[in-house]
Image (tube, rainbow, N blue to C red; front, side, top):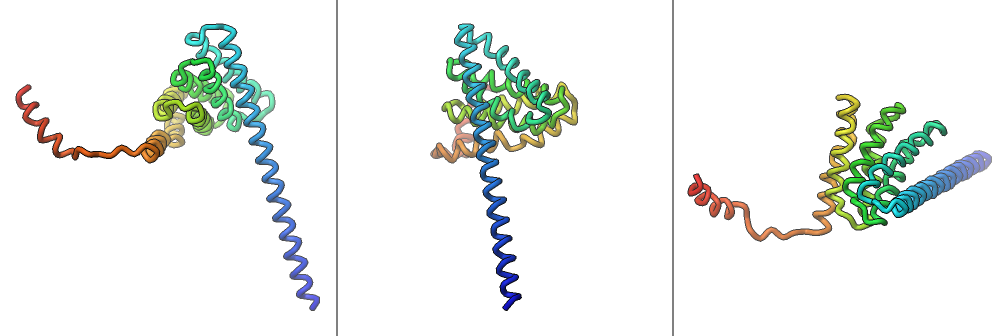
Length: 217
């Protein structure tokens, strides 16, 4: 009988430990989500209000984007951590803020990623991880505002690789490895959401095109 009691007590305490950890993790994750939402809101409002005040969205958006990214990097330097976590929220806030005032989201998406990658290199952060988080933030924001996700994904990935190129070959490889499949993934999602029936088979096109090519030559 005593042995059974020991086993039952052990099981109960393990169950409590598991529940306690689960609850702790859940509350921590909720806290992180709340912080991220606050950063998105802060950046979005700051960017849109600043652009409204200047009245020149087209020329000022890129400058303000650089300032915001720089401010984020300086903040994380002071705190000593958080650049990888915060870049997604900051990128999301920038794109949404620019969108609020009718700015060019595609251009700003590219500038945001470039700025984050270069900034990460300057402070010795993980360039590839920062690139990935920034690209994710830019894409997430574009989805929420109903923008051209595929186009933004292309320029964001291109911007990350271009910025990594100014750092060195190792950075380029790391960024490419981290971002592999992002654009294709977006295409696949877009394709499944909007299926396009293919009525004309490719061979039929080739047969009609080949005589025309012959005439031209």
